[in-house]
Length: 164
Image 1 (cartoon, one colour):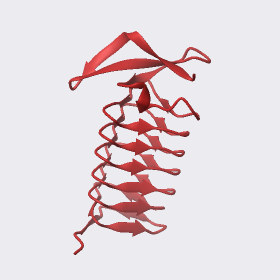
Image 2 (cartoon, one colour):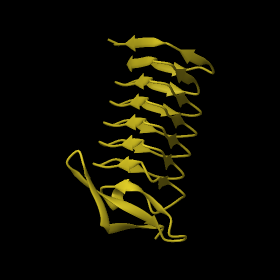
Image 3 (tube, rainbow, N blue to C red):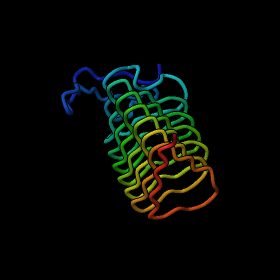
Image 4 (cartoon, one colour):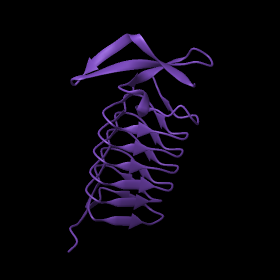
């Protein structure tokens, strides 16, 4: 086992009882999770001190949840992804690869962010949007069925593709 749930260090957050985690190898305290299934016992994935993972969300591989970030709903964060700052990943969003979601950004709905993408500032990726290999900054919104697969930095962008 990589970590244990501390039954004596709990908090109630938005109606969920979360337990602090403790790394077995060095005794380092981590953040809070609701269930053992929220954080894989494999790889180097970790939930840092101020971060929270709850409901049916899952963190796997080498993913890191840092600062005051939250992962919830049925969201999946895997690969070498880093969720940091006050970022929130929720609903059925999937984050994989070498992705950074930070600051006050949100990824939710059925959105997928993968590859080397960066979602920063107060940006939002939602709906069925797909973002791959680009940096989305400063209050950008990528919604609906939008598909961004470009090697570019996009600022103050508002894309919504509703499809057919």
